[in-house]
Image (cartoon, rainbow, N blue to C red; front, side):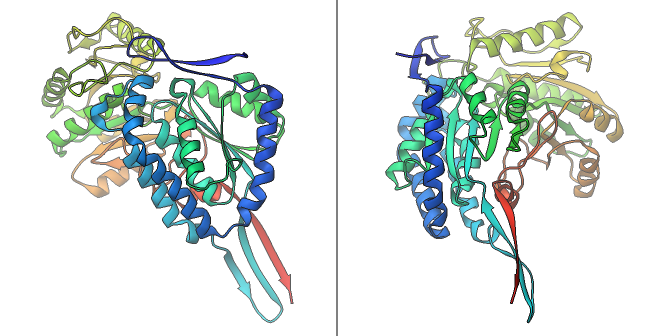
Length: 457
């Protein structure tokens, strides 16, 4: 038996699942089969591809009762939240609905002498490297539109959610998507690097760490393979003096703590106008004190363990460093906090941007809250980050939100909501959050290439 990938469950540290990785030769053979199958898949009518993909989505939904506890075992999300099928289906359905118009030929002009138009042509074989924190929803962002557009897809999932890609491939195959058109693979980092550097793929979509994204780009250097990335985040919330305070607290704290803070667009730092600061902190603390930390298989649990002990260790380190530098904690250690994956959610005040907890991605259940006196001060603090994925603005004034939003270096501006991915909008980032754009019509443009026709009659 060759090298194995092992999913260590955060529930109890046991090995929940393991799979053997593909050899280099076997991996290149997978891609060769994908490339051969893609030609016939691309030739199928668009509506047929849409129908097969949506049948695959429905097949995933049919086994959701099995998936929910499986996710709890693999990455710790409590079963009470019911998994990811709602967002999974919403995103795929939207991309199916807009496929015809998004992929339609662009007419440039026709007269008695010439016919001119631009077609959208699938890249060929798309490599999707998906993360563990929302493993179904992040994968479907690219898998569904890539297949609908006529690409073949090779999916590699994070070891922490080892069984997700397998589940998806089985469901899609059962619905009629050809096996070689959508393949799940188990790969080492070295073989992944060899595939990309060997020009095996026509487009790579990666969601994960900054270091992982850099590795993808280095592997692709000189191959002219397109690489789309969604990497780290340190998403801010800003509560203005005219905000609905209760709504702001409820939404921003949920955005900071849901999924044990392990959300790509989770709220990691909050700036509150000085007139609302004390009340905001008091309400936030009351919410967090009411959480139930525990085994995610228990329906009473509202916050489960972090997906891996090393992730929890990083959050503890950031909190400890902040306390040493003068930060104030507001949540006493929960009795269920075991010093390992089970981590007390924490609210910090008296924080500054000199502290890592306000600069580095935490990706855990901790949030720092700072007092601000003006929009200009808040904008300066929100932009004082190497990341730029989303920003959440709380005000009753739409024009003010738009004006502040224009000044923020970010991919998405929310007003009076947070931590949500609208499939009608482009999911994108800037700075060290990466480049590219998923979902919406722009998602289709990134998964295809333009081909121009200049036909003389």
